[in-house]
Length: 119
Image (cartoon, rainbow, N blue to C red; front, side):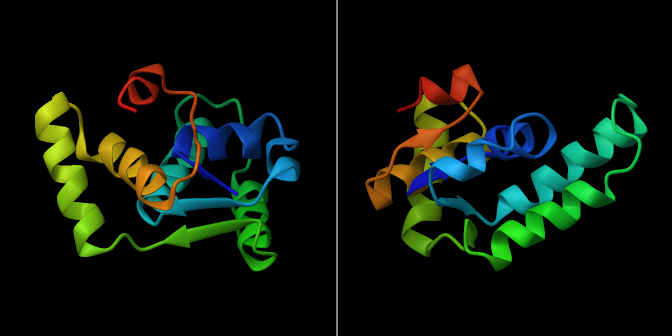
């Protein structure tokens, strides 16, 4: 099991489905909204995706099969992430993924180099 951030999930949905074959994934629930926004951006702004609907369906297939699990962070995780974001001068969004990975003792998978340096 790994913790994946939104960039990793989006990459798996749009470019490399094999990312979902390797391990089960847990991610903070904020990833749902970030992934949906990225799919929207690819369809409506970048226009490198004709229809985002199949990607949305695929994501929910992954959740139904328990390959991808959205986790609601605890109060402790949220507080820790907030403190980390202040300390490292990063967004809370980045800090919550790092905090969840550290709290669960799991590797964080990301394509965001700045986020990777927070660990």
